[in-house]
Length: 253
Image (tube, rainbow, N blue to C red; front, side):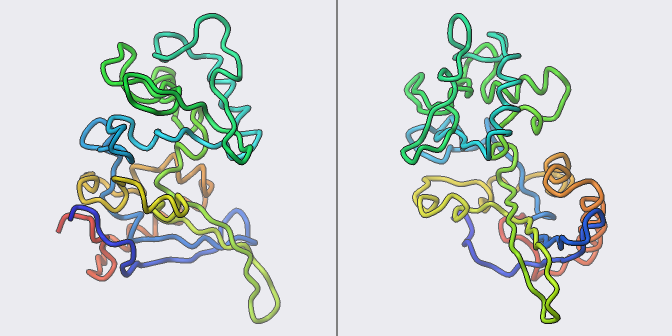
């Protein structure tokens, strides 16, 4: 099977955030030094078989908070028909690209086009603007990172950041910030029902460089530059050691 089991031995490193002594970064070296890369348009089967060309954009993107939505809105206002295949005619209104889920959480609107359901910003195969996210295409045209233009969850996936408050035996406390793989379980119970998923799939572990290098902009945004620089030092040391125990099982041997 191309997808490996969810549980396997991992190597971790913990270090204090150089910019914030109240934070301890807990980083998954096995994931961050793996050869994963996004293969959208190059072998990705989509998370649902009835939308194989839509990647992981089938369900739309939930906004992290109002600030996230406001930031994205600023770039939506910059989109033209040269980037956005499904751009509505006339003035773009919030309801053209934002909707609420069954629990009232705000997210990008989902539409069916060319027989496949996905986020309204997802250009379909064959679109003259290019297949894929219109906001990602805008970032490329503006020579900026897609971290700037896309909803937080879109550029973070398949990196996962989690926070936990920890109390030491001496009574002192710190915030543990975990950086790891966003596997199927990150999607909640429904993640086990996805028809295909990339992060633990051998077909997506084909990059020449490891995740900590290919995803530098995302990691800097999640951790800060100083913490990322420290992470890089630990990742380089881990790559040099290359303990067989700490290899991601989806990586080529």
